Image (cartoon, rainbow, N blue to C red; front, top):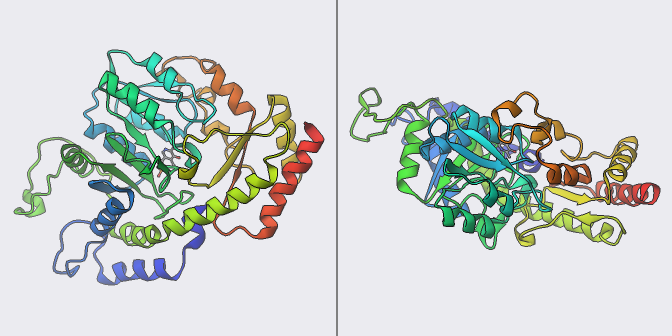
Length: 385
Ligand SMILES: *Cc1c(COP(=O)(O)O)cnc(C)c1O
């Protein structure tokens, strides 16, 4: 569960302090708030942490994607390429922006297959959204090479990978823009919340305007007289989220280190089991570590493996337990808006996902919890492989 496991005294104090001052809005009321701006501080600290020039706090990860697509200037009917295995929000954000989601296969990294990306680019493609699923960075070198060749901006959906990195760069800072989610089950949580990151001043300003009804935040003008040049909506983060985010950000390195340590211990213990093939990690050192995923030789074995785990009450994560929300082939309610318009158009993704099992890795995992997973995998393998 990441940061949510650690919510305690510091979060309570930071939030109480905002409530005591009484200003929950991120803008204005300078005197009453004693010139304390928690969202602004959180954004500045987030920039330093991930290594980007600009960050904008927003209401959710979904909002972050929507705002970033607006900043990129997406127009009705523009094509946006993303991947078959993701949380439904990635596709919803494209639809909210009136774009057409074009869906690629995933490869054994369970992230965007760069070759399929190249094959799906057309003269209408306006953005590419690789998703760093389950804390693992996508193959960004290959994806960026394709994007540069075609001159198409990359928006990284790093909602599940806050703090993960790829060859020394934090995910979300490699493409033109990045997005993060701080919902309750993400690595860093503010209850609900999100962030947009970029190194491009123009994109940052467009995002900031769009997320606040077009307000240009002219420091010379009171809010009621502020200037505007584009429309927008309300996707703002509030001061309670900002205060909480600062505390959680300070915990992030600890969260990642503990997850990575727990995951490494389990991997080491089950790595020798024949028939267990770990998911590809494009940069093993950058894995956020909140999920352990592997493939079994065939779908039938994975199903039996999962049934065994369920019987033993050992929890899995997303694969296969929440595939309904994470694989486009299951989305009869959305598929008509996507291309290809067919639920069976991603045979390689589907075959891989049906062979996959994933376990949640938490920050505070007791030796007993770790042993239960190791033992469960060993016994399931013995029984079904
Ligand atoms: C969680 C998530 C989102 C949306 O974030 P919310 O804060 O829940 O709105 C978007 N994309 C992916 C890949 C996610 O996992």
